[in-house]
Length: 264
Picture 1 (cartoon, rainbow, N blue to C red):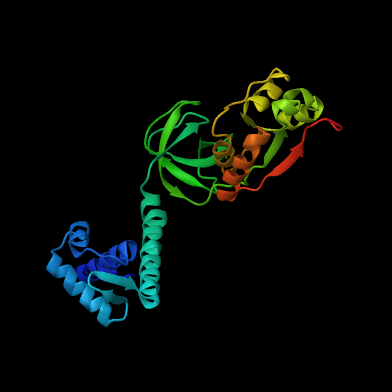
Picture 2: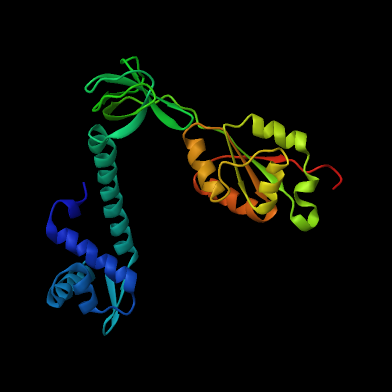
């Protein structure tokens, strides 16, 4: 465990070094004192110790720079703090947190339920057949929301797929150049269809279909895919790149489905 979590002096030392690193090379001890919540004299003492330990170099009056050794120490301490936070979040709080699920049958408060993910939503079924279970803290009829706590096991779930169908710009033909059969086939196999860009919405309306959303399509698709849903994103050329960036940032893989009629 990080020493910053064990004693106040190391925690203050860590915060002072972070402030120096953030403000370097012109360092105001008064500003650091205000940020950390100690006196300017105390900051001066901490800086002197950091210089002595080789974590900070003094370049002149009120000018300091964090050394490689100082950066390495910060990385080690922050990594240790992050590991502790992950332990608290995943091992400690996970067992006491509450979440909502849809009841598939009548559930009584205090009853053990099996948890599953369907259509991107958590469902609860009476019984402990697993592999993921919890305890209902409220009663609910089938189709109602029920509060669940005491989660155990792992919900059986495979990530969904994301297919990006790119529509040309309006000046290049836009929705009028779309192979409707290809777009229709892609949309029919998806659990969720979203769109971004006027050309994309127009293309779907040629199929007499409105998208579930027409803003933040990349974020919606990424979230749905991580919850096991198969998603089709219809995007204009101008928006497709941003959708792809969002999916990559969320580590969600995707496929590009050509829907433009050949020769257009």
